[in-house]
Amino acid sequence: MKRLSTYLLAAAAIIAAGCDNNIPETGTVNSAPVSEVVLDEALASGLEIDMGSTYSLPEHISYLPVDATNTAQYYSSSDENIATVSEEGVLTGVNEGTCTITVRIGSAESEVMAVIDVTVVEPEYIAITGIAFSQQNPEFDADKTIDIYDILILSSADPAENATEKVNFTSSNEEVATIDENGIITVKKLGTTDITASAAFSEGVEPATVTVKFYRWVEYERFPGDGNGITGDPNCGSAREIMGSSQTEWDFMPHTDGGWSVCKFGSVDDSGKEGEYGWKDQDRRNCYRYAMLDNRRLVDRSNNAHLNDLPDATNGTAFCWGRPGGNNNSKETSGIYFVIDMQESLIVNYFRTVHISNNGDDRGVSVTKVSHIYGSNVDPASASSSDWTEIAQQVSGFYTRSGAGTTDDPYVYPLESAKATFENNTPYRYIKFVFDKQDHCYGFYANSTDADADRTGGTIQIAELYMGAKLYSE
Image 1 (cartoon, rainbow, N blue to C red):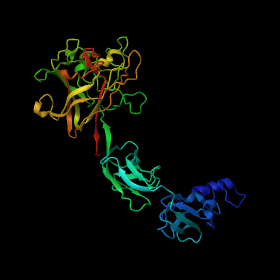
Image 2: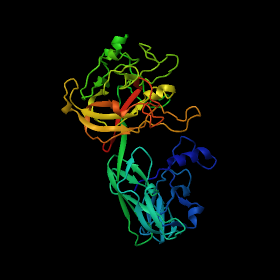
Image 3: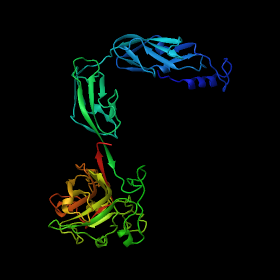
Image 4: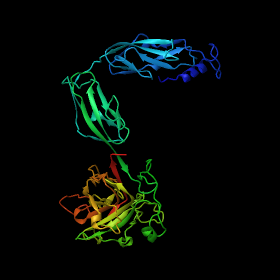
């Protein structure tokens, strides 16, 4: 059996007692054997516990002399059909009845022992008459607390009261997940397992089983040292180095850190043909290929502080382009697109954005919809249309305003979007975002009957773009 070491307890007693009680001074060696096992009041007159309950014994057991050194405790049950006891001294009531628990100190054969009378009784409870789950194939985020009672339905023998009978739980694959007596699931790795719930005492109640699946949200690092940019958050990361010391170098110089970049950027005409811009052709503030991939959120939008502050970009950066139908004579006749090169093939089934600010007219240049998302593993410089696979279309609802604002503006505009999710389990290196003019992929409608209401501005701007995946396997 596993031994419970109590040497520290004995050492503490030696230090506290000193030499007056024939106890050796600190630093000397004592090999006095245990001569007596002492049970406290909780155990001396016997112990009664409920079926299914547990009770820890070691803290209720001591020994004499207090300076003994070989004090390992060994436990055994006279009838494990009534009560069991673990190597660590945890007693569990199994069935109604009586038995004895023997504790020996020194060795499993030691004659120095004490016997504890144990009575196991059926607890008082309101019986369960039926068990079911509210979901058939639930999925759970492996990084959050999972309580199976959130989807467990128990029918009660008392129509006016909830059932209080204990529920027993098991997991069919404990390499994936375990479940404790309180219904809390601990995920060991991503995968699936069957969780079974059964009534602890009521006979004839059919157990219920549900197959649960666990996933984890994984957000990819866009460059070495990347983070979420939220000041004070442990995952805020560092800002990406700005390449070059001039506007031309900043816009055109390929980055050397091996991170993501916008490798292609252009327009879509009415026939669907894609054009490609030179970066300088846009002539927009902060429009360089790493602006939404550099962990540099905009800091101050007042007094033209948003303009480029090369070469450090201490006020942040934003990817900015003329939107289709904008009021600054945008070049797009039907839409625009950009392509992100992730440098490796990854499964992408969500993205999220950070807006330039949530103040004033900035609400009109935020991205609220993406018309199409494509994936490819062929270099966009040579890829044909057949090399691109559409993985999502008409993606919306990820950036919404709420109605808890002020009298002047009844809405609150968030700085960050929610995850925009879509179905895709194929890894791609290149991800293309397409914004069609007719889809109005920017800003908000104050009046749904007026296509121009609350949608002023000639640009669409993104301070940061993140991508990741909902993964079901490690």
